[in-house]
Length: 230
Image (cartoon, rainbow, N blue to C red; front, side, top):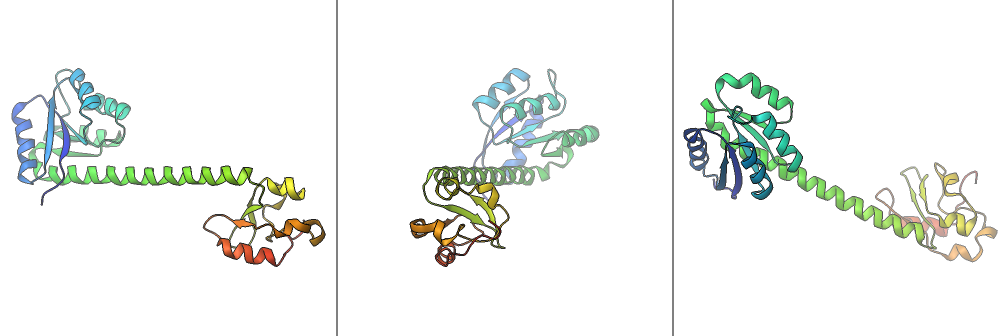
């Protein structure tokens, strides 16, 4: 199976181990470009400039170790997967790294699991990014809707599934003299008596959100239902 090219940052001081890692990835037909570093300064530079999709890191290096490398990565690229690739004698340390935020660890004696670990880590990263982007887009849309609702002259409100107010915009205060906070938890669509409504009853009220359909809100508003206990 052929996969999309990945940018892999290898943190390893032994050339023979680096070659074994790359050979295993090539054997699994993982397409990638890689950079190789073995000290803190080079690692920091490549984290910033190379923008890796995943970091594969040995635990013990001459100038720094995996714990420090992971701390640097989390500071500058917090969503980039960090996979520890270590010797069998370091398994307990690898478990400790997992507790501190490493995405996975692979023993050098069992590198066959490395390709799937890389693919799964990057896939999980992409899912998290998509979710965060979708949530941000939703927050932005909600902020835009609220901005309109807060400044329009129309009466805009949101009811829950029980038909109770969970939001009413400031126009209720400006147009009807009703504090929107007084409506929360009360039932009804169009507050106030027919006399108080007057010509205002001809305004179209809009229901916002997923809990109620706008056309339903308009239909019940036209029936001039009063809010209980207002």
